[in-house]
Amino acid sequence: AQKITQTQPGMFVQEKEAVTLDCTYDTSDPSYGLFWYKQPSSGEMIFLIYQGSYDQQNATEGRYSLNFQKARKSANLVISASQLGDSAMYFCASGGLNTGFQKLVFGTGTRLLVSP
Amino acid sequence: DAGITQSPRHKVTETGTPVTLRCHQTENHRYMYWYRQDPGHGLRLIHYSYGVKDTDKGEVSDGYSVSRSKTEDFLLTLESATSSQTSVYFCAISESFSSGSNNEQFFGPGTRLTVL
Image 1 (cartoon, rainbow over the protein chains, first blue to last red):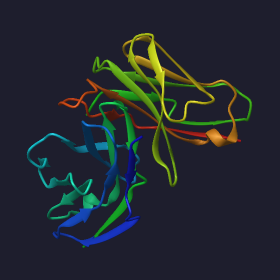
Image 2: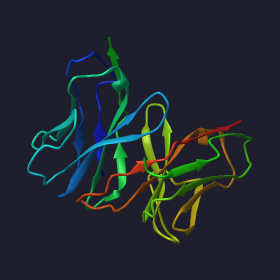
Image 3: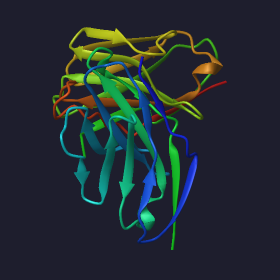
């Protein structure tokens, strides 16, 4: 079974600084994918970025990048140049070939607070 | 934004009553999902659908049933609501679920259900 661990319940960062949100995963699937979602205080879940286990390069989407270290089973989200609007809960999730990409497993989330 | 609506957005009901939540999409995506979100648990998959009349169980399916008679609608039913089913329920859709692209899930706005 897949398991996602997010060890940082809360993180603080100043505006314009970079921040890394940790995510480690545990899977026996030979092929898997890792997702990051943002949940602002308004409650909606917003897809940010995806990394496939066989992707050669780390995924990037604007200010978001995924620091994928396969040997360490980590998929940390890096937010560059933080903005006040980045304050939210962030969830890491995974799905695998055998367990099913439709059966995403989510971590418990990290709350990020960006201060002026 | 993906065209996903959920109804109702808020509901308060009593233990033992049946409850049906509706998810409607305008994206013509094949795959639809129901999750619940509880503090300390992140999101957990209840049921998902991979086509009209094709559904399968997720991680926490006990006490829930689903139906999908049309591509655009996915219904979640609590046959006899219990207080442990008080939660925020999210519907999601995806174009595919594979290791490739277009497998990200897009979420609806959520339904807050309180069972007294």
